[in-house]
Image 1 (cartoon, rainbow, N blue to C red):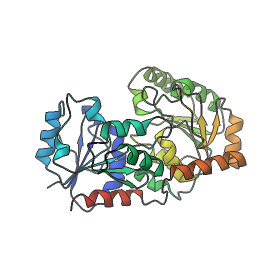
Image 2 (spheres, rainbow, N blue to C red; image 1 turned 135 degrees about the vertical axis):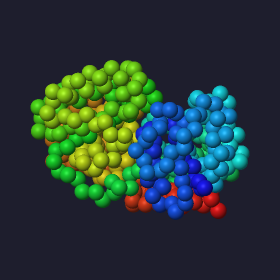
Image 3 (cartoon, one colour; image 1 turned 120 degrees about the vertical axis):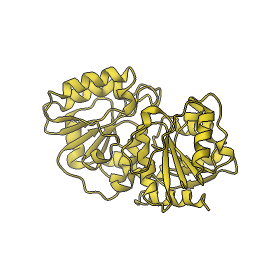
Image 4 (cartoon, helix red, strand yellow; image 1 turned 90 degrees about the vertical axis):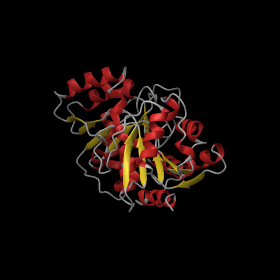
Length: 333
């Protein structure tokens, strides 16, 4: 008997569920909602049920008959022919698969899910405030943190001049990838740094990011100090990096848990500001990377980062998965 059913529509989303599932003592299963989401590298058993309509999803949930459904997607609003009805019969918990800042993701979540969930798990007070203002009055909002970032708390940096480049996607996030990917390779080519090059999964599948990724992958084959990161999730790369190079991707809020420097590329496709969560630049240089690696943030940057982190209100104590699990289990009583 399945007590907890996780549903997700992109393969990379399983990391959030696994970080929660390790703290539950009930039987669980995962229901991938797209064919491409199947076969994730997770310890949670998958349910094989093709989902092509709202009726398919309702039938699959009814067949599994869990005590609670945990979801981290907007698949139903974006893809299905009509709204499923399982929300009326089962408690639904929403948890984000990434806590990006500056992309309008809070608006999208509250618009599409505000009236179908019973519990909304917020990464921090910033998100919780928006949920409470926009979701139905009977939705319980709880600040839990970022479960997939728990392992990053208090992890020692390698101090091996390793940099992770991981910007948000172009089509949905309007990030810096298309504008900066090849420039980043120019900066690090022949340097003393080891660069892990990690495009967002969607920029490996959809244009215009796909062509950029293919060009960069070919070039990386001839760069001894650059590695193309093909892993489903960035966890190991973050643990193994001294510095993150990104924009306002959800990976940024995970990286904040490490306390290590962040260089934010501000040349983004969207008409949006890059929030001051690190050292910001539109003209990356190896000299700037050297300063961050050796000395950390300048005092003014460190002050702005500390202020913004306080505004986000993300608990970074390594217990986010535990708190999220408690909220999920409360729905099974």
